[in-house]
Length: 250
View 1: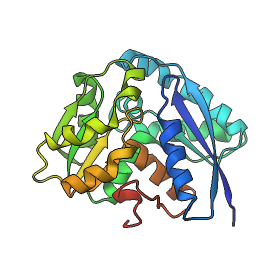
View 2: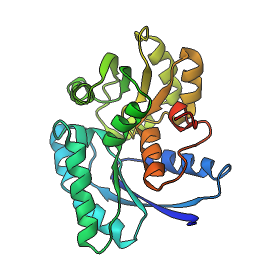
View 3: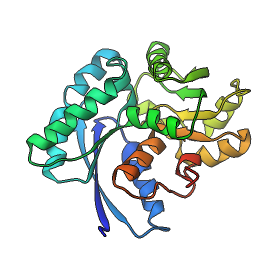
């Protein structure tokens, strides 16, 4: 049985959270399971979360996939949800297939997880129907994200756009603000709370708190990405303190 796994991430150049939260979760898992992980990234340029800049950034993802396949990582994560969702409905499937084929052309065959596809998959695993969503983006981009998720078969009952345009400022958003934001939302018939529909907005430290306050299961884009990476590696998707999806309940 293999014990050491290399986790590759394609990361926006201004993203500082995915290389914090994903390693934090997988390192926490090491306290209860024997598998060990190393973390490797390649960057695509992006500073402002605008549709044009996101599209230009997405064009660099092929290069990043090739670079990470040089390192023969075991799984490759595309760590930007909004870039995928802003490219058109269902685009995560196209992106995953294309980036996977880049690794094959480079003599590897590395499975690709996008944070956008992982969030959809995680919500399906949780049997979610009605959602409440928090996102840091400006309203028009948040509407794109909400519509993308609706088109995948979910009802979005309430959502909040925090309207933070600069990607570095998104990373600086204090996760301790999230519980109050969630409590201001209509959660009456909600099955699952998407506490951060963005892999740059930190949320990991308050997932358990929001679950306790609301009595609802909570997921984030980073948690769903970790879940899908573990499933892709054929490992038990369990991480202490990372909310319902990684609790072992599913």
